[in-house]
Amino acid sequence: MKFRHPRRRRRVIAGAVGTASALAVVLGAGTPPAMAAGATHGKDVAGAAAPDGKAPWAPENDEPSTRHKALAPSATPRGSIRASGLKLSVPAPSGSHSVGMVGLHLVDKSRTDPYVPGKKPRELMISLFYPTSAPSGHYQAPWMSSLSGAHFLASRGLSPQQVTLPTTAGHVLAPVDTKLGKLPVLLYSTGLHSDRAQGTALVQDLASRGYLVVTVDHTHDANEVQFPGNRVEVNTMPSTAHSSDTLNVRAADIKYVIDQLGVLSKGGNPDAGHATLPTGLTKAVDMSHIGMFGWSLGGAAVDTAMQLDHRIAAGANLDGQFFGSAPSKNLDRPFLLFSSGTHNRSNDSSWRTLWSHLKGYRLDIQLHGAAHLSFSDNEWMVRQEAPLLGLSQSQLQQQYGTIDPKRAFTVQSTYLAAFFDQELRHKSQSLLNGPSKTYPEISFVR
Image (tube, rainbow, N blue to C red; front, side):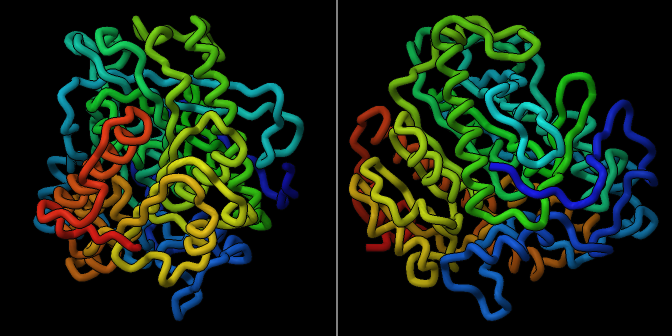
C-alpha cells in the first residue's frame, strides 16, 4: 500500500532536544495531526456520527482535546508544580509477578514504508513486557524514551522541566521467569497518531499475570517513535490516507512482528542491531497461543489483523470504530467488544456489522461512566496534568468520563485478563457469563 505524499519535508529529530521554550507548543494554537487526519478518516466511517459529525470514539478523538491552552509556566498556581516538577504515574500491575521489559528495533526489508518518500524499508519499534522472578539490579524503563518523550510533552504545550513522564513497572533486561514455561503472547496496537506507551498500564498488568505482551509503534502513523542512535521519527501520514488503508498497514506491521516472534522462539535475534536479549526470552514465546487487543483505531486493527493472520487466536477491541471491508467478513475466532459508556452497537453500525459476522465466541460489554479516552494511559496522566493544562473538573469528565481512574483500570484489566485467560489458557471464567455484583459498572450487550 503506497500513499501519495504531500509536499512536506520528512521531519527527523536527532541529538539533544533544545530548551523548554523551544519545545513549548501552546495547545489549541493549531490543528494537531490527529485532528487533521481525522477529518479525512471520516470518509471511511461506517458507524453513526455524533451531531457535530465526529463520533466520540472515532480516531480523531484518540488524543485528548486540545481546545484548552496549557498554562504558561508563570501562570502555574503558586508556582509549586513548576518549581518541583510534576512526576506522573500510571497504576502498578495487579498480578503476582514482577515485570521485565526489553525494546527491539525491527526492519522489514520485504516492505517499503508507505508514509515516506523513496523505497525505504518499513521500520518498527516494539516493547516486550513479561513476567520475571529476578527484577533486582535492572532499572525500570521510562514510559517513553527521553527524546520522544520531550516531543510528546511539547505537543501538549509542556516540557520535561515541567513534567516528568512515568516510570513503568518493566525492569529492563530482567530474566524471563522460565518456571512459568512458554508464555501466551498478546499484541497491543494503540490509537491513531498515538504511541505504544499509551497502553502501558494494561500491558504491564497483563505481563504481571503471566503473559508476554508486545506493544507496537506504527511508525509515521505514531506522533513520535525513538529509534537507536537518538533518532526520532514523527507522524508523516498524508492527509489523503483512508482509515481502511491505515488499518491494512497496521495489520501488516502486526503480521511481521508475529513473524519476528517466531524467529525469537527458534533461538534467533530479530533486532536490527542484535541488541542484548533477556535471559530465557527465546524459550518463553508460545507461538501457539497468540492474542491481540487495541484501543480506538488500534482496536479496529485487531479485526483486520486477524483476517490477515490466522495465528491470532483471540482479539479484543477497546472502544474502536471499524473501517473498510474487514467487519463484513466472517471471523471464526473469539472476539471481545469492550466499549465506553457512550458507545456500542446501538449507535455504531460498524460494530453491528462485525457482530453479525462473528462466528466464534463473542462478547460485547460496556463500561458505564467511561469515555473513549478512558482506555488509554491519558486517563491517568491528563488528570495529573490538569493544573498545567488549565483543565477544569467538568472538562476532565467530558473527556474521560465520570468513573474513577483507579476503578476504570481495575475493571478493564480484570475483564481483559478474564477474556484472554479463557480463550488462550482455556480457563473457564464465570465473570464472562453475565452481570457481576462486584463490577456493577459492566453491562452485557446481548
